[in-house]
Image 1 (cartoon, one colour):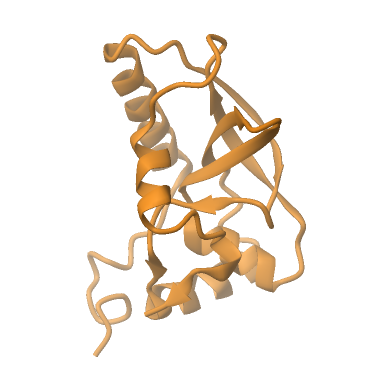
Image 2 (image 1 turned 90 degrees about the vertical axis):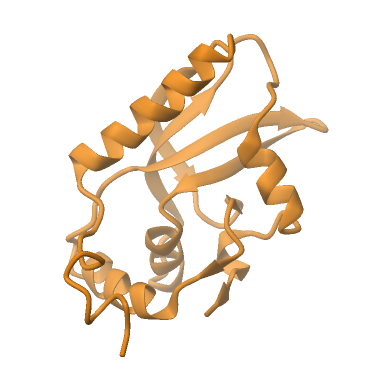
Length: 144
């Protein structure tokens, strides 16, 4: 029994509207913290994205991969971009299964809503979470 295939509530996947709501929520939170955040939609390379979760659910991934392969989930992922140690580091906020599926399907980049601060680097819970998990790349996340 799988929570992704047997539970109708879990079978709801990301939509353009739900992704926009999540993006708006993240930007609002940073705004309340006094952190100026900009957002632009652009392609990002897949292989360097740092995960902000510690694993991918195998059952969900199998479904998402089929949908990505069929072209059904062409919704930009959400990425937070930081410049540190003379390089850009991109943290994946939402879209771990979609990114992993695209990597496995041989794609090199994906559309993303990229968040960054014109004030320079900024405090981020996503960066802290990624560090707690070892700054693992999405392509290397374990399946559970």
